Amino acid sequence: MIVTTKKDLDAIKGLLSDKKKLVIVGCAECAAVCQTGGSEQVREMAEALSNHEVLATISIQSPCDKRISSRDLKRIAEEVEEADALIALTCGSGAQALDEVTSKPVIAALDTHFLGMVERLGRFYERCSHCGQCILNDTAGLCAVTACPRRVRNGPCEHILGTKCDVYPQRDCVWHSVYERLKERGMDALFLAYHGPVDWSKNHSPREEIWQR
Ligand code: SF4
Ligand code: SF4
Image (cartoon, rainbow, N blue to C red; front, side):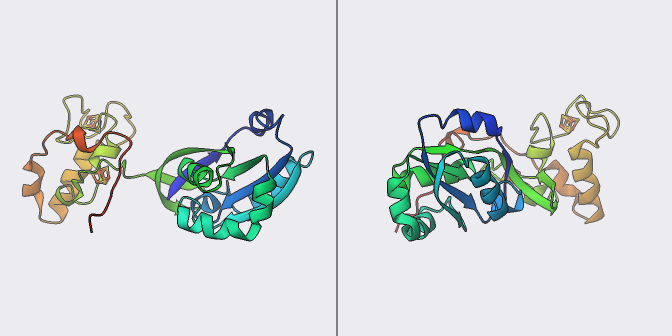
């Protein structure tokens, strides 16, 4: 799930001085879970912008999916056409998808942070930084690339303090945790598996995945 937080409302209002007619679009998936773009936040945004003309509000299941945005926005096609801008309570990918499917100015109302694992509402953890060259099968399912602040792929590094990470001394070094978990599972030989350097040619932005048919 993509973790988002709300941008400062005054900063958003500051971008709307020449935009009177608005359509507010929420995300009923990730942003709804983050309570940044669910239907309640869409309603709150409409109230906060009541000195503008809010032509329509809509919650889209996955606004980052252009097929779904395109389909759902047809329900309010006239309002979208008339709008000076869309307010996107979505991740950055969703905001750009809305721009591409409507060709309207889109104001991004959220900041997008990371791909998160949800423990419960309000507790989101980064567990994968989408490196594209996954080593989870060698590390007993713990992502050292993300959990290690130096992103060491063959650890631990020379700075380890006993079993703790020197950067976050209150936390275990992830490579210590990897070793303990591998040992528990009778897989400790894997600890010596060597992970070569990241092939950055596969990792530069913007990344694409295009199926060849
Ligand atoms: S190694 Fe970590 S960052 Fe890379 S793909 Fe696997 S889980 Fe994600
Ligand atoms: S002590 Fe461990 S977690 Fe901390 S930077 Fe070094 S390898 Fe990474």
